[in-house]
Image 1 (tube, one colour):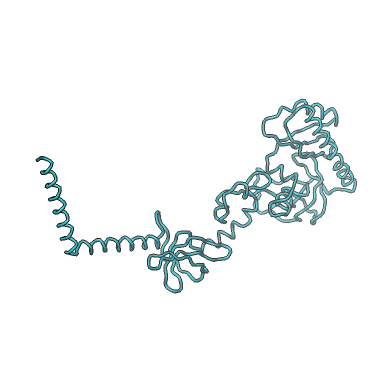
Image 2: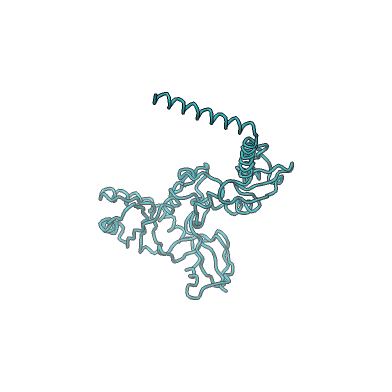
Length: 328
């Protein structure tokens, strides 16, 4: 069991776990930690808590210590330098004709490294750019390529709902999103409607997945046969999950009738199988049986058979008489 805290190094991003030894931290305290970008100035998001299951081969890294006022001043100064370095790097990349987009810059508090994040559609040879940046800042330069989702999280923006992007506002890490989630929520599978600013599936699809999964457990599926309170049976043609309502196609006397009913007023009678929905199949079978019965009744009438027989003989005799006249 290890005592740890949760630290975030930017306004948004993943909450990293670091171990502490005896010292108490509260939300809002500032600490110094070793990260992939070097030594960084972080903010405590989660106070002291105990990590029960800890893998021995990969234990949480210990913090370097509580940040001082001098560290806070240095971190604020580097924040202003990051903006200048971002503009400088963009100009250099444009001058060198590099097809890349510089997104963010991070300075290490130990004055030993500067990290540049960029995005690009293809592989970029940035060796010349690294040399010029190293000559400018006299530090070790690292350029890291990020994907479309990380780029959008770093830059921020507004979503289709009119609110700030979830990944930039509060999400600490990306959740797996699949097209199956959009299907369960009854959304149109149009890439323009279910994709976010990054061009990937919207993260908010994951937020409502559990709710839809729970509601769908008690709902009939499209094509199932249900029975209404008045005893009429029909097929489900449309399902409204949030409203808990159904649109049912009822077949009364061979005619189709649409009814909007609540889920509580229906009982599932038969699940849909491959082919035609149950109620529609029964209506089609009834119509086919009625046609076959009418056909049998018509054939059973003796007058109809005799008339057809006489007409057939008369027609045949007239054809023979015409053939004999032609021979003469």
